[in-house]
Image 1 (tube, rainbow over the protein chains, first blue to last red):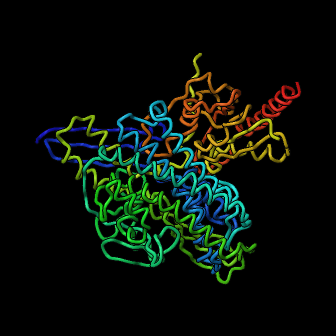
Image 2 (image 1 turned 180 degrees about the vertical axis):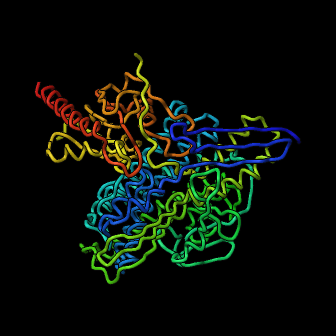
Image 3 (image 1 turned 180 degrees about the horizontal axis):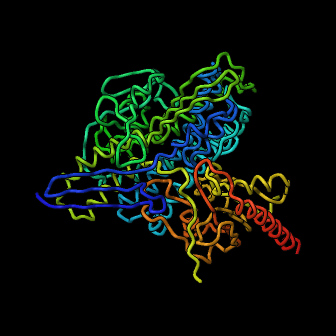
Length: 434
Length: 157
C-alpha cells in the first residue's frame, strides 16, 4: 500500500531530543524508523578518573535510582578483576541474592506499571489503581519485599553501602535472612503465582510480531546466569567477558546521542528475552510452568514477549533466593572481612546481567589503586540498534492500521525493552494555581 | 521513636538535583533522634515505603517551578497540580509526581505531607551545587527544624 506516514513521539520534552520515536514513510517507502535516546554514562570516564578503588562502586551506584545495584555490583567485579581480589563463596552467594532482589523488583514493576496498562489499553498505571487496586497493591508488595532483600543484604535498599571490593563490610544476621525466606515463600511466591494468572489473562493483547535477531547474554555452566559467566551469542556461542569490546563494537549514528552496538549482525538483543532464549534450560520446573502458562516458548522471536520473560524470571528469582538462603544456612554465616589487599594493579572487566540486559564496566587502575581509564556499556545502548531494526520490520507489517494504532504499537515496542532513558529524569515539575 | 519523617529525593551526581540527599546528610550530622531520615536517591517510587503509618512527612526535591534559582517553596501535596509524565516510555518516567499521585489513589498519603521544592539552577551530570541552591540548603535545614519543633509541641500537647 502506497502512502505517507509521519510519526514523531516526543516522550521527554524536557530532555531535548531524547526518547523520541521518529517514523517517516513516503510513497509507501519507509525512510526512517528509529528511537533517539540519551545514554546516561557519557560522562562516565570523567566521573571515574582519579577515584580510588574504594569509591568506584559507591559512585556508580548513584548513576541511576533504578539500576543502582546493578552498577554497584558490576563495578565491584571490575575492580576485583583489576586488582586481583578473590572473593569467598559466601560473598558470591550474597551478591546473587542481591541481584535476585533487584531483578525481581525491576521485572515486576515493569510488567505491572508499564506493560499491563498497554495490554489493557488504559494509557498508564493510574486508571488501574481504581479498577484493579488489588493488583497494584500486589505489585507494590513484591517491590517492598525485593527492597527489603536489598536493605538486609546490602545495608540500604536504594544505594547499597555494605557491598565493597572483596566482600561485604557487614554480613546480614541469620534471623534476618530466615525472615526473608519466610516472606519469599509465604508472600512473594503466592503473589508470583497470581502474577502469572494476571499476565496469562492479558497475554492475548500482546502484539503478534516476530523478528529473529542475535540474542546476547551471560551464560554459566551451572546456573541461569545473572551474576557471572561468559558472554554468549545465540549466533556464535561463548566469548570471554574480557573480549567484550569485540562484542559491543559501538558505533555512532546520526539520530541518537547514544552509540549503537552490533556483533555478528546489524543489531542484537539483550535483556530477559535474550536470557530466556540462551539459558532457559537452566530454569527450574516452576519457571518453566510459568512460561508455558503465559505462552512463552524457546526460542521466542517476539520482542513484546520480553515482559513475559521478565515475569518468568521473577518466579525464578523468588525460588532461587530461597535456595541461596538455604545454602548460606547450611554453610553457616561467617563474619568475614572483605579482602582488600590488591595482588596486582591494571585493567579489569566486570559484567553482570542486570534487569535490562548485560552490563559492562571496564576500569584501569594505576599502582596506587586509582582509576586512570574507565568505560561503561549499558544494556539500553546495546538494544537501540535492535529496537530500530524491529521498527523497520514492524511498520510495513502494520501499515494498514490507523496512525494512532501504529504509534501505540511502536510505543509498546519501546516500552517492552524498558529503556533506561536517563537515570534521573524524576525532577518534579509543578504548576502553581496563582 | 521518630515523630517526623524527612525524605530526600534526587541524584547526587546531578548538580542541584542533589539537594534532597544533601539535606539528609546535613540533618544526619545533627543527630535528631526524633527524625527518621530517608535518602530515596533517584528512585522516587521508593517514597511509597515511607508514607504508610507516618503522621508527619516532609519530602525535599529539586522542583521546576518557574521561579528564581534557589527559591524554596513549602507546599502541601494536596494543594498543587503536578505535571504528570503521562505515558512513560520507561520506569524512569515514574517520578515524584507520579509516586505521590499513586500514593494518593491508594490512600497512603499521611495526614501531614509537605513538599519542600527548591528551584535548581542546573541539573547537569557531574555538576556541583550552585551558589543559590547552597543557600537554599541552609534554609531547608531551618524549615525542617522549625517543623520538628512544631510537631514535637503537637506531640506534647
